[in-house]
Image 1 (spheres, rainbow, N blue to C red):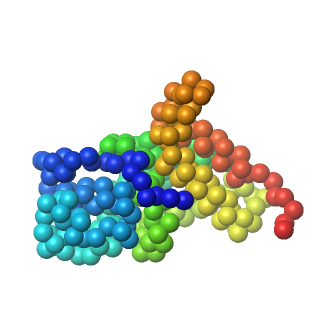
Image 2: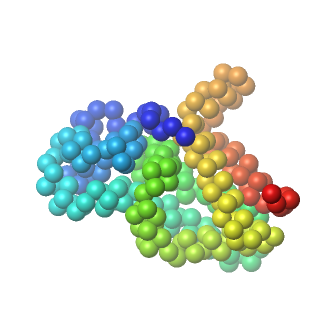
Amino acid sequence: MNFNYRPFTVLKHKEFIIRNVSTKERILNAAEHLFCDFGFDNTSLRAITSEADVNLASVNYHFGSKKQLIQEVLARYLSVLMPALDQKLIAMRESGEATSTETLFGALVEPLLSLEKVRPNGTRVFVQLFARAYYESQGHLRRYITSHFAAELKHLNKALHLAVPHLSPSEVFWRWHFALGSCVFTMISSKALSEIAEAEYQQHMVIEDLIRKVITYIAAGFSAPLTTEV
């Protein structure tokens, strides 16, 4: 998958980054912008300080290291997404009703859409950053997420297994990552896909429409019966 393009540039001009925000926010906004465009590995602290119009000492003061800066960029979204999703999971569990995969994945819709309030194009930006974290093997982010959102991840993992009792833990692992891959591709390519749908099929798609479509698809695949192993 090629991420070397700019489908979701968050901030077009430096003045939008530096206007009416704190030094820490300027650094976070600049880092997010550059991480989306160039990735974590290919973005230097020098590039971030130049974009944010701050000195390196400011980055060290507020974040300590590039890894911690990356974590805080993602944390702006995760701190909204994970508690919101957890509330949905708790409500489903307390209802006492059996949970289908479509209901389970459907619980992601509102939490994902709530990211639009975090930053402009927040849902797409978060998914792109999340995809880069996998693509570029940012192991420290995995450790950060599992340590800071352990309870939420435990609830999600339990809900996934309860929704598909016919699947082994290893099969759930693979299907979960296939589902993530489908969602990531759809979100990252959403602008192009929406333009094609409008031109070819006269369908006007907004971000919520795309999320619901891909969730219907991955829910069916996630719960599909096992085929003959190869």
